[in-house]
Length: 299
Image (cartoon, rainbow, N blue to C red; front, side, top):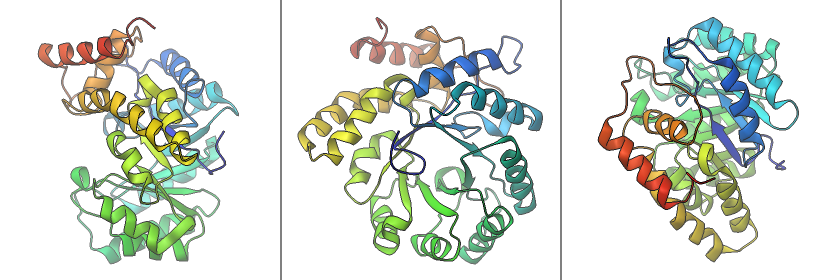
């Protein structure tokens, strides 16, 4: 386990479905256990990769209970309890806190496109209402339509002790560097994109909220550790080795390619829920080719 509050490698876990579209809690339990035994310091439940917008409230709570039970004290559990409604985000976070979480992932409110002052007040209200819950901010302007600026993150970190981390998925390394310059060690910066994990560490990042760690979690953990130990050449070699898997998992909307990869590896995670659609034959073949190249199908 890492000395950081959440660890270095957090897996944004898929939500497995049965053939009828219902949640497959049995597979979720097994997958979560596998992940913490194979490179993951923790699990992010009901994030974007878990298709949270398509999950019902009761399903989210049951997933949290099942995954928490499966992981035990072997890893951290972070729950995606954000919303574009401040009151809903507070209610969801309080409910998850009662079930038992190690942290809350709070996404920038989507569709509303609030100004920075609105973002500050939104996250501040959640932090104030749930003072015992460590909060990771989630900045992903490609999905939300709004960038959470580094100065706003710094203001939040300075004012609220339980806002401790940010999942930075803007793809902007300069912004990550600015967050680090303004906050130092008081704000843990996690890459929100696997490909940028190593580059982000050079500007102050501490780890990743990962998609690829479902498949190559141990490799990602070794890459991060190698960089921390000054073994830059080894870290770069692992980055280059994993480049193809980082890329192919986004050949279509996440988690469509990832679920295809997991199915090809024998995990019965099912398909995706509408409004997402099944993977195309061409993309499925692309995924299979990369799995073969990395010798993952034979494991």
